[in-house]
Image (cartoon, rainbow, N blue to C red; front, side, top):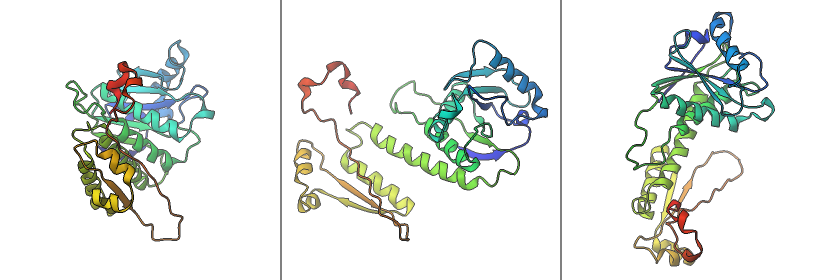
Length: 280
């Protein structure tokens, strides 16, 4: 996806879908001006009706839309007091999925109506949500979604500042999250320990991260015998991947530990049979 920022009258943004975030307790959408009068009237009509109240993850489509966009999507954000970065990421992801469902190639997220969040931080989180929101977990499903959004515009009011750095951070975070999800979603007969370690090494090389891979001999030498003994039940040898990234400054060391395991059949007699196919 290509990301960029726009400003000016909201109704003059040229996109397949224009997304406006509206809360339960918010007044008129803050980003609309006198030049967006027709759009403001349609939003007010939607809010005054019995359907759209701005509840969290409530959607209302306006079609045909006034101005240059083909459709307008109102997305409920719930009560302002409970709206934060996590909710913004979620509604951004949900908005992109909704737009993709309409076959949209371009989407504009209007962020100035997201009150209480610093402008460029909101851009970063919205981009992160857009990237992760389009991830399809059903990798081998025959009728999985094939269309995708190609361009995302982030609407900001004039003078909001250069958001390019925020866009780049959001893309980096979202791409990294999707990489981890892909590793987990691949079936275990494909994403074996050697394959997973190879993918991690490739990722590290592309991003300038130090990577150390411990094979079976190294694990035995390190005394990781419990891990090795469990792996003895598989045809695939175990791997431990260590990634190191130095900030170059006097900052505290942060360590994250995770594990990837093939479906363990231990205790199979006490696992509910009807849910077993969900386990990987």
